[in-house]
Image: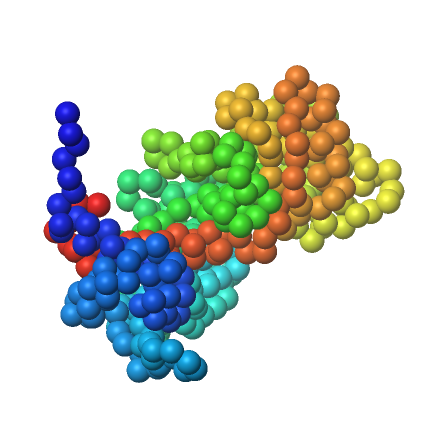
Length: 380
């Protein structure tokens, strides 16, 4: 039986997508350069560029090639296609930026916050940043990708407040906050999940499809990546490890978050880990500091043992403000070598990986919106 031939409309749509995608990777190209990079014939590319010009998705920049041979025109994505909002919400503040389909950043706004700022202050900072960036870019904010240092409900995008969480923002609803300034979807996920995606795409675990990313900072979190996909679970709460039982300093079982209280490593009047104090202990040469390091390695090792049992990763990545310190990594490696299922432990490589991961997804989603605009009736 002969397979059916694709329709002319589908072939045109695929060609137009190739043209748009290559212009998302290069600021400007001639039709000949587009043909070379896509492997599609020059006449077919010329027809596609003409269609995309008529659809106002591609423009002639007015620039021309120089030198010998036939003069060529440079084409680029139309400037009015809009940008995507990328936002990171942490206990220290809100960082927001607008990115275009080429991944270029158009303005960044930082708003400092206190860890106990509360839901209204965070919502105000996020909404104000979106309004300001929307006014600066000259085009619509077509979608938003938000990273939050709190659990995120998978179905609604609302933040979920769990007991003992150090960042007090309640059930903040980023999609509702941004509804008036973002014209399209608002994607929200936990910052540790975005960090894991960034390490997978650009960092220390490129090509590793199964790994666990452990974040150790003021808060405690974990991301599980299986078959190259971040696993989120029914509600989106995979990796919420604060209340996982592990070994305490005296060998008694207690929740992971309670270990830091037992070691006097919490900030005053808070469940947040006292990061400056902990960093001093990780670098101190005395026997007391060594006992704390051993206790931490046992507690973290208990958490990782649970992750190894349920996720079966190829490797473990440890990040966060104090997680990637060499002495801690060495202590964890030593601890895991004595466990029945040992895997390599790697320090995270990226700075601000949660923002990098959210930014990458925003560029990807914006590109897909632009491609669909060329042939909205085509089933992709």
